Structures are given as C-alpha cells and as structure tokens.
Image (cartoon, rainbow, N blue to C red; front, side, top):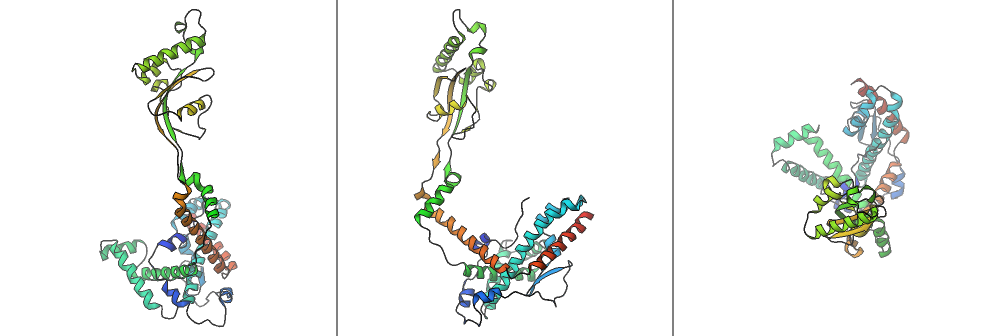
Length: 386
C-alpha cells in the first residue's frame, strides 16, 4: 500500500506562494529572551482544554489550532483506500491498513500545525501589515485565475468547502509557515567536484543516458525445413540453404522487396509480416539466442543496409536494418549545474525533514495515538454503513 503525505510539502514550500522572507528576516534582529532557541524548541506545546468541541467528535489541539476526525476522514485518497475495506465488514483486514494511513496523515497534519505555531512564535510583533498585504495578493491572484470573475471564484471556493474568510486564513497560515521555513533553511551547501561526480555516476543511466534502438527485417533460413524441391541432387541441406540465401541476396540487390521475399522464403516466426521485428533496445539483452546475434551486427549497420548470410548455427539470417538510433549520453560538464541543483534540493529536503522531526518532538505522541485510534474506529463506523 502506498501511503500519501498531506502536509505543505518541500517542493511547494520552495516554489509555491510568493511569500515574504523579510518577515523572519526582521525576527532574527529582535532581542533574545531568557531562553535559548534550543530551550524554546524543547518546551512542549500543551493542548488547550478550554476549546469548544468542533464537529467531528474527538479533536487534537495545538495552541490555537484543532484537527478534527471529520477533517482526517474527509481526505479523498484515504476514503478511496479505506472505505471499500470497511464495507467488507472485516475489521481484521481494515484495521492494519487504516492504522498506517491514520498515523501517516495525522503525523503530517500535526507537523504542519506545529510549524505554524513555531512560525507565529518566531514572527516579529508588527507582522500583520506584511501578512495582510501578502494575503491580499493571493486573493487577487486566485480571482485572476477565473478571469477576474468574482462570482466564479467564489463558486469554486464553495465547491472546495471554503468561504473568503477561511481562504484568507489558509493563505495567512501558509505564508507565515513558508516564510519561517524559508528563513530556517536559507543556508546552502557547497558541493565538491568529487561529490558531484559520484552523484553523476549514480544517476547517469537513469537521467542522462538514452539507449540506442534498432528496427529490422529478417529472413531466416532453416536447412531442416527446406522442401525436397529446394535441395538439388548431391547437396546437403546446409549447402541448399546457403545456395537459397545467395539467390535471395541476388534478388534483393536487383531491387526486389525484402518483405515479399521474407513471406516467400523465411522460416522465421514473423515471415507472414515480411520479417518485421518490433524495435529493439540496444544493450538491453532482450533478444534470446540465436537472435541475440542480430544485435551484434545491427548496431554497426546503417538504415537501409543488408547483411547476410549470417551463420547462426542451425540456421542462416539475412538482416535488413530499417532504422537505428545511437545511444546518447550527456557528459558531466553538460549537466553539472543540474547535478548541483538536485543535490541542493535533496539537502534542503533533508533539512526540512530534520526541522519537522525536531518540532514533532513537542507533540503529545500518546494523544496522537489515541486520536488515530478514534479516527480508525470512526472511519469504520461511517464507511461500513454506506
């Protein structure tokens, strides 16, 4: 089973909403309090006990935010994966898969919530003006996507289960969180040439090499399948086969059609289609013996040329190459900037995961597990009925 993650993910954090890194640039200049940054991170965020109980039953609360079972169970991918299992009515089949889904999704959601709380705590006091300006731009961009038709944009929000206030709140939260993550991950790593070369060698075949391909026609002559009329007095079957191959080559040199001659004389499995083979990837070892011999000859031929007779042991081949595409491989020098960029993204993704893992230490893991168990049972109760 493939578990999907649903937080604001790393790629979106880098290229999604246009946000304002100066929000946290300002924060870094603020005077420090009595606790160090590490001490602040180690202080757990207590769940609020005086929050109103939202719809959806049991909730998981962090600071000013709540996560309801209804929110978790409304994720379409989760419904598609788990609802059919619940409808079968077998809890022993449903529960293990539901547990994996719930833990993954709740962990991601809680990570997002904690990141937002940390972002709020680290933001400067006068952040609202910048946030409001940024949110306004996001609203304008959203409306522009619907040809500046406010009614159409509002209808789409309703379809998504939102109104303008909830949309603005979501944008405010995303901008604040992304700005915080951007400031926390601003440092870039310098990669040595050796590191880049090692990475290039790891991924060259998958990303920077394109194997060659060849397509050909084949006339296959098997001595043991010659008719008595094709064997002259005193000839062995092998000699008769060689004589037939020579005659076919003469006919080809005089301009006769390869496909017609294949239909007439070939003993191969594709004789009825003129000896036409599907394209073959060079170097993939996709041809079984004795046909693997054909690749050895074909890779050094050009389109339209004919080779034969080729001795393949118990048979003779006449080969015609229809098309050939040589293998292509991009050099290290060509792709060095791309390698550097990919390694930088991997590095920042690692730093992001470390940041999330560090922040998740503040979560009440016992409460998360109880909330996951509740969601598992609530999902089974809902989905098994329908």
